Picture 1: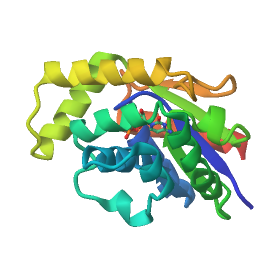
Picture 2 (picture 1 turned 135 degrees about the horizontal axis):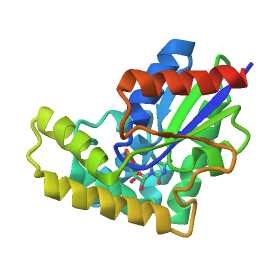
Picture 3 (picture 1 turned 45 degrees about the horizontal axis):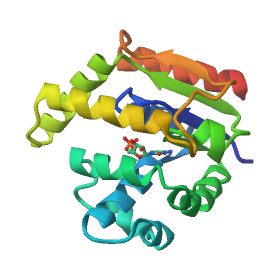
Picture 4 (picture 1 turned 180 degrees about the vertical axis):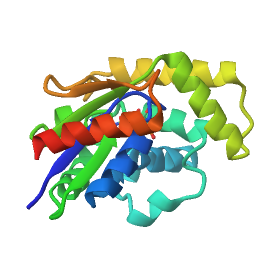
Length: 201
Ligand code: C5P
């Protein structure tokens, strides 16, 4: 039986951490859909045409080493406004969501566009300042040189682009449960997510 969990929200709100923990808890597969857009973004940075890059994306492209950099994130959110790029990535995401044994997908449009019938939907947010601080720690921890001000500006620019685009904008589905992680520990946020999913099972 398939069981899909949709986890959407802005950059660095804790979606990834919550998704991984929830997937491990329930034994579900996990797809970080941002990686698809990052992989297309990295190809475009290297000279590819966006739509062709999305249409020919290969699983091994998701393992490229530098997909987590702010530069690639910026390219990702720019290619993500192109309807043909988004369309090229739909089937893969829907097939993943339909896997037997359950799936967690995190992104921006999972509960609204990719899996409108997901059994459980979460929208994970936090203040821009909180998110910038977390992303700053993560990036500097990985040896990437950034400033807190720069990360905050990037986060706000990317949120605005994701929220205001015409195609599949970032928005909470009407039936999504909101989790604001600004003042929550990781453990508390994960427990809230698990409770929402248990209630849907
Ligand atoms: O989640 P992550 O920060 O890795 O996503 C990178 C970018 O990919 C986002 O800023 C957004 O523009 C795009 N994205 C999207 N739809 C998704 C996942 C990511 O448009 N489902």
